[in-house]
Length: 349
Image (cartoon, rainbow, N blue to C red):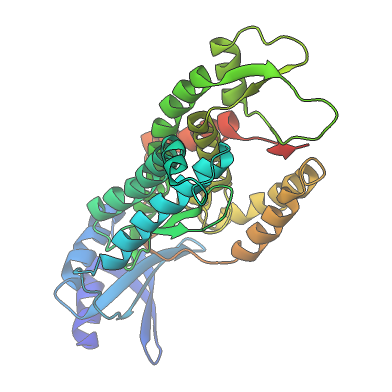
């Protein structure tokens, strides 16, 4: 079978070298122009075989590697996704109630106090993950529904949600779209929630003689606050309604996800645009994160986590076909969202 594939590839590229390993065959040469059209023809041919090709470029030479990849079944059990979703609704309701001064353990009716926060934060998280899910499916990838992470007795009641991509990413264009879809969808939902929440929030005299947790401002949150509440007296502060707090968290999580490192959404987007050149921005990014750690110690932890995930590689089936100019311009959107939503000092006393 492999000999037949090599005979076909001779029609589609000028072959300079063939390296046969135990499980992978590597063909080096030049794909016949137009390259993007030829790559699609080769992909279509491989659908009739048991092998999957991966296209890359090194030192101005095209490389096609192909080997056997087991088929991933599209049918999935969703019972765990459903259980975790409703469990996370419950834990976020409890968190919202406790954050608002309620105590469902003593008075069960206090559970209703937590509903505005729960539904707001769950709307943001769900739309973020479904953005990834629907776009990845549209790109032909096999992806799981979101797995929500419920956390009882926690400030937020959740550590968010994740989806798993079970098949290879077809192209850098697909990686860009999938990485971008989640933050943009989450941002679109978080924005009106934040506006409504700020409008429902109260201006009160800030307590004296004791510490209380202050939330930092992103550019977007700061300007929305000043527009909705143009005059906040000296000595007073804006005490966030649970819906506003959910919106604030949604914007913070969006900005953290858009940091262009590793397997974060921003990392997917940056790799789709820059490929291996993405590593050139790592050192200045780590420097910024650790510098910000002196404003909020959490950035030290985030910087270490980013360092750990920075080395994880992206596997793209076609990393040769370039992005169009419009796609490169489209990739500026997450950078704008990151600038608007980033909070240098999220928490302070």
